Image 1: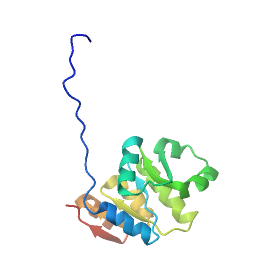
Image 2: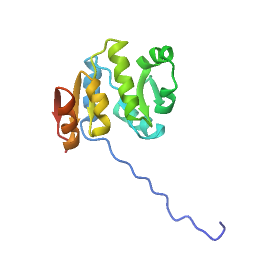
Image 3: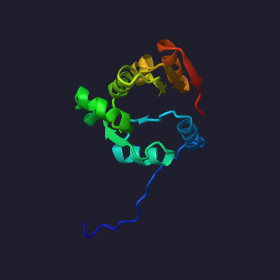
Image 4: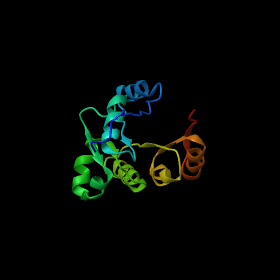
Length: 149
């Protein structure tokens, strides 16, 4: 390693889209709980959720940890979850199912592809993003369509 010289370290960040922070704030002020479920790693998920105003004093959990919870533990932690990282489509579906059945919540889910179909199907409202999400959403429930730019 003595013959190597570090020239640079580069970081790449995908910026939060304009209007997201304001939209989250509006939802929270209206009494709507916003949760983020992503396949990103836990550190990335926390950073994005904090930047958007989603992760405040709640819980950020990884999908594999969520999957291991008992029904009793689920009922205890789900109200605290604000961000879920490294999640699988089944994790999103499980979260939506518990929110609707155990907590009598009205749930809206965003989706941008076929992997979101189970959660979109289970949700009260599906919010589609992009062409793939729109097609999946149409097949599974009445939905509001949002075309991403």
